[in-house]
Figure (tube, rainbow, N blue to C red):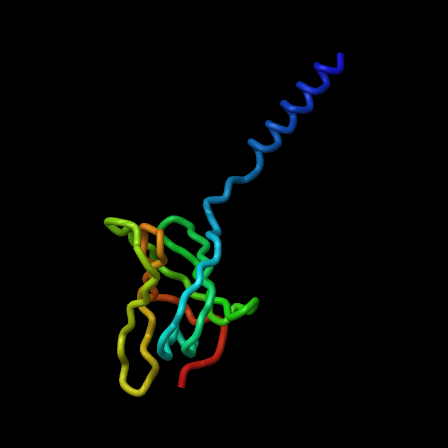
Length: 130
């Protein structure tokens, strides 16, 4: 009798788990990123220093959050692009504009096989660029 109750509870728990809405959004662990010169992500200026990056991946679109300590200082939507091989280090691709801090247009994180492109990203959190 006890065995039947355990099986029944197990079956109910399995059914409840199966009925829960599936989410395709995956948050990856935070990775350290060193910025060596002023750079901006949208209208947010990142001063030289060490930041943490967290990515919530949802297929071809990702939400990228950049933290200084525990605070989100920049947040942007990025298009993901599959790479031929995993990135061997963190890297940032910049675009120069007259009179402004260089604009971050691509981010690659060590160990990941995709790039995050910010060309059409929306303005989010942080200090405005000059």
